[in-house]
Image (cartoon, rainbow, N blue to C red; front, side, top):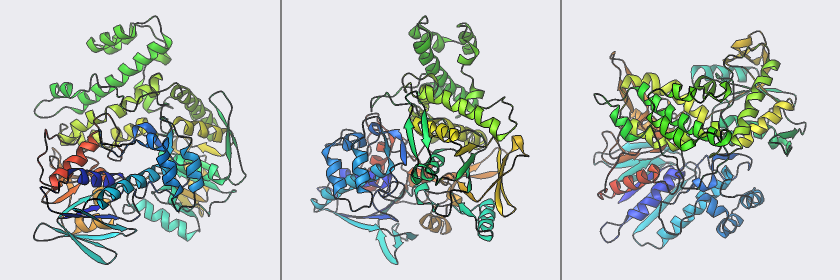
Length: 618
């Protein structure tokens, strides 16, 4: 049997591992596995040769490519603290080897690992898989690295032809997980790109921050950064620490930035006008989750009517779980006179949760206010850019102080951390199509998804500390809400709609985000070739008014992860964002992570092995 895997990032490596684990030479034919990637093992995001300052946003002990209970398994944390990491990195032929060796020796269970270190871990994991294959006479591995897959064709006999580097490879089964990829340019991007070329400006399209060419940005330039999530932090790091600036710890939860003199002035903004929430310092064990109290599968099922749960009922259950955790932490931290266990039972039993909280006579700033959580500058009168800096720094310092208390102590960021523990509960709703199409398209997608990213997909707390220090040093300025950007007067122009007469001109514009994984606008040649030939399509969603809209996901059979209409073609990961939830995550050991289950299930499907207790990947 010939098996193809397109994408050698973490998902591709998980797939390879599970194919090896599920292959039984006594009962199956010999197999050849073709592994394709435009880069090498580990994929594009986790390149080893990238700045050490670019870090992950999940603690080291919560990341592993090994299946639970797999022999000789190491999480990233365990690997970094073992001799294996030092031995492996020493033999790497990369320019930043000394930096890797220095960084890996500083990592503990709760460290936020440099992405380059994760890349080294992926390469080490792959080397173990290669060793296993080399010792197995029934498995052959063919590597097609540093090559684009230009085209995929479906053959009449339910096999596939993969074209890479002007070569054709025929496979009986094909799995693709393409990871972060390029999208077709929007009209706005096309216009800004043309404008930048006409007037010799720097315009950075969405993509990987470590790959962007920032060499044309000079110390006397103004730079506009649009977007304040993870990529924002990466670009700021490259333009400050990456140019020789340094931070010192003041010993009071604050940092001071010492410029090198090579930094540009950075003007950053977004629709919301504030950076993403920082991650609380991890206090959890690697396998420790907070279980849902309200958004349980049983509770969801109780709210299902005519096959669907209303978005409002779902949203209420989700919010109650966050509030339950918030008040539990708040009372334990600041109100010893309140019995936390008695409160928790009262909150579970309450019909009117607002009335229950009111009975504790808390101060206004202790009441969990969803409007302020989602819009921290709501109600603030914004008159000038300089005036706005004070408001943003005050909020950032408040939320940093909270995050530094730790994920099992901090009321706000500790409660928000619950969103990570609730991922499978949200996946249960999505993968079982429990929203109506209208609720999914009009309420879940869009603002709700944006809110989830804002609350739960930010950087470690140290990044927010750095932003405050950079604001104090005058290197970074945050633009108010409703950021607007155009090209005019031979410059890029930005302003906040809240103080529209205050205009900032810049020599560079950076779109600080990766491309959203939307099937119909992907520019990935493998995916576009399959779209053009009808092998794959985006899932179609028909609304109650008859309008048909495309989901971002490839249309798949959720029971098997097969592409609809294809017998032997499978996909998972970012190509299925929209029917699943947070498909970019690396799996977490010890918590029955559904990503492991998905890899195992697809491998068994490929080998026609019965799946015990099959479940939809949630």
